Image 1 (tube, rainbow, N blue to C red):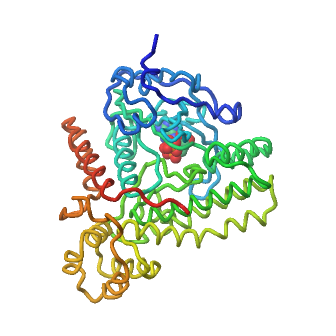
Image 2: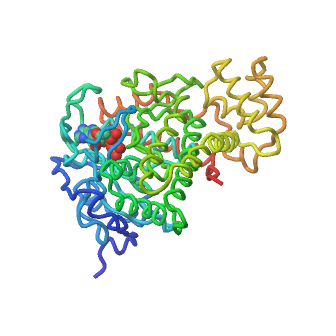
Image 3: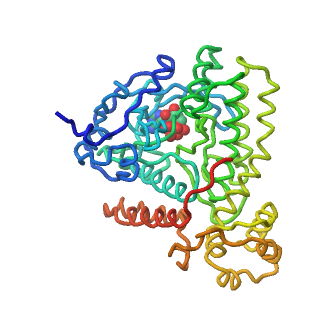
Length: 465
Ligand SMILES: Nc1ncnc2c1ncn2[C@@H]1O[C@H](COP(=O)(O)OP(=O)(O)OP(=O)(O)O)[C@@H](O)[C@H]1O
């Protein structure tokens, strides 16, 4: 007999077993009093072959955590350490989540299904292991928006409300609870390597390096696998840092346990989009020194990459690792110009570095909103001519005249909208209020649809060369 899962042609995998038993601890999910499906990512469900699950089956797997056959027999709370605001913390690990399953997408790439808010684990310390519903809604909005703006991000796969009343310091409490499932190309963090180095576990460091190269990057290990991995990570995290700037995004908590060795962005807590190009703009109220401010994100990510290099030292000399570290500034500049031109929808032989410089100067001097700037210039010369006549914009206008619109860059109807699709904090709060006060989910679903339309208009961002 064919089971619904076989009929759905989902694509199981179990690659993490290569890292057992050191990578995580088998755990049980919490038994929630209620499971109400609030968000289901049908696009990605189709991509991993789970699109035809009924609502009951979906809740069974992603709210009750009945195992998906042929993948992990039991969820694993992953072990990691990390620098949090530059202080080393050996007490962390998955404290409210676990790796639930591994799958492959349509292109055969390995994907993890990880949870947030699925209950306590050996790493919960004093935490309740839960996620607030508002936190889950915010993660949907962040992942959808970043994906549309070309950032290499985890995807929100599922959000199920779980019927508990939570106490939190940063939300009016009691507040509603939820469990989120996230799709991501691995959950191997820089902090995963740091933990292995902390315990001086060379064998684990070697296994992690091999796993990252072969399973996550699809490469054959060469003469020096640690240096080879460092090279890939530097390229990806430089691109990540640039992608945050071009999106106007402030992650808020760029700790080394929140940096994936694939360079994929994840863990959306106190994030915000900065309306204006303001290097000092911070997202987290607890980031008092502005360590993770908008303009300091590249520095923070580079610093975290250095912690990976330090962790790899038991396997290799410092010099070739330092050489890789030193590539970061040039890689970041290249990624910034590549992504800036992509978002502007321009091609041609002009001076791309000058384009970015003059655009940033124009935005800073005039206080023009980032989303507005990109929308106007990509949307057409007429709109641009009308709004950007000021002297502050003269250098940008001059440089921009050396560029032409990229093929099809303005074809989508979105570019004829008067206003860009943005994510100001006020709108996030309004969307949440409708849910909180009236259980009205429409504004959230409408916003997701608007963001996806904006994403279609942009097309795919060009990948790292
Ligand atoms: N409510 C909670 N209950 C238990 N542990 C928690 C809770 N909130 C955070 N933690 C734990 O604190 C540490 C760091 O938290 P952080 O907010 O970076 O992670 P997270 O958002 O829970 O998970 P991830 O990094 O996978 O997105 C982790 O060990 C995390 O699991």
